[in-house]
Amino acid sequence: MLLALLAALNEIMAGCNVVAKSSHLLHLFLLLLCFVLAAKTGRVSGLNYTKYNRQVSRLRLERIRKHLEKINKPPLITIESPDGDIIDCVHKRKQPALDHPLLKNHKIQRVPPEMPQVKRMKHDEAKDWRKNETSMKGGSRQWQMWHGNGTRCPKGTVPIRRSSMHDVLRAKSLFHFGKKQRRLINPARRRADAPDIVSANGHEHAIAYTRTSQEFYGARATINVWDPSIEEVNEFSLSQIWVLSGSLDGPDLNSIEAGWQSDSYQATGCYNLLCAGFVQTNSRVAIGASISPISQYAANQYDITILIWKDPKLGNWWMGFGDDTLIGYWPAELFTHLADHATMVEWGGEVVNSRSNGQHTATQMGSGHFPGDGFGKSSYFRNLEVVDADNSLTSVRDISTLAENTNCYNIKSAYNNEWGTFFYYGGPGNNPRCP
View 1: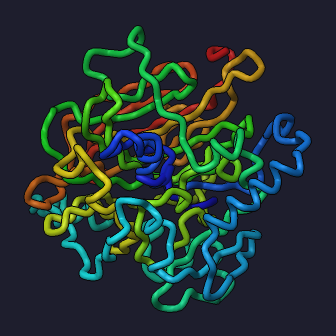
View 2 (view 1 turned 30 degrees about the horizontal axis):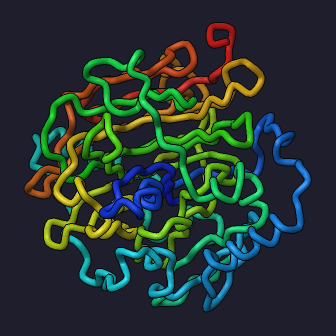
C-alpha cells in the first residue's frame, strides 16, 4: 500500500478545494490543498485497462516528459524501493511546495509546532486510551516499503516518490494528472443538515461528521488500513479526515484532507507532493510510497493515527502521524476561510462510481465489507477527536452519519470507553442490491 499526499493532501489529496486570493489563480487553488496517505496496490483486482491501452502520440509523450522534468526535482541521492518505487531525496528548499506563487518568500518553519494535548479524562478512560495507541506508529517502525532498502535520506532533504510516465498515462489526460475533480452538490439528494459531500459526478461516501456548528482547530482519528480493489483505472477508494471551512454550497470552500487511498497508482493525480503548497519537513516519510503491512480479513488488523491541527502561534496547518511524528504543514498563506478556523470535520470513506458498464462500480470502500460484519472484517475509524481553541483534543460525541446508497456502502457508529466515538463503514459496491 502507498502513502500519498491528497495536497491540501489531492493529496493528500485529492481532494482539496481552496479558494484563490485572486481570480486568475482560482483554478490552481481549487486543486491545491489536499493531503492523503494513499494506499497504492501493485495488484488491483479486476482492473480495466481498456482506456489506458490507447495509442499515445509522440507529441503527447514529449509533453509528458517535459512535465515530469518540471515536477521531479533533482535529487541529492536516489533510493529504489523493493516494490519498484523510486524515492528521490530532494533538498527541502527545492521541494515542490515552494513553487507555489504565494510561497515565493516563505521561510520553512523550523520550530516544531505546539502539539495538541488530550484533555484530562477519568482514570479508567485514560487507561483504555493508552492501551489502544499501539498500531503502526511513525517513529522507528519500518512501515513504508522503501525503508527495507536500508538507505535513508540525508539530513536537510525530504523523500519524494518520483512520478513516472506510467503514472501520467493512467490519468485521463496530462491536464487531469495532479488534479482531483471538484465534488458537485446534487440539491435533490441533499439532507438539510448534510455536509458538502453529496455529489452529482459519481462520488459516493459513507461518513461521520460534526453535527454542531462551532470553531474547530483540527481533528484526529485512528484509521483501519485495507487494500480495497479498484474496478476502473480512473476510479479510487479513500479513507480520510476532512477539515472544512467556507461556504459548503459555494465555490469558496477550503478543505484539508488526509488519510489513505487506493487508486491504481494515483489515477486521480495530485495527491502526494504533485501540487505545490504542502511543505514536508519529515525525512523518513515518503508521501505516496507503499505502506506495509495492511489488514487482512478475519486476521491481523492494522491502523494508522492521523492528526491535522492549526499551530496556534504561526497559523500553519500541520499533519502528524502516529503518536508524535510530524510530516509537514500547509502554510497559512494558502488559505482564506481556514486562515482562522474550520467549521466542520468529516471522517470516512469516498469512492468514484464511473458506471462504465452501465452498472454501479465494484470498487470497494474500506475492506469491501458492510459495517455489520464487525471487527476484523469491516473497516473502522476509532477515537474520533477534534482540536478546540485551547489546542486541546476532545473526544467527539455529537456526530451524524451519512451514506448516499446504503445498499452499496454504509456506516454504523457507536461509543465505548475503549474506542471513544467510532464507526464501521464501507461495502463492496456492485452487488444484487446495488445494481
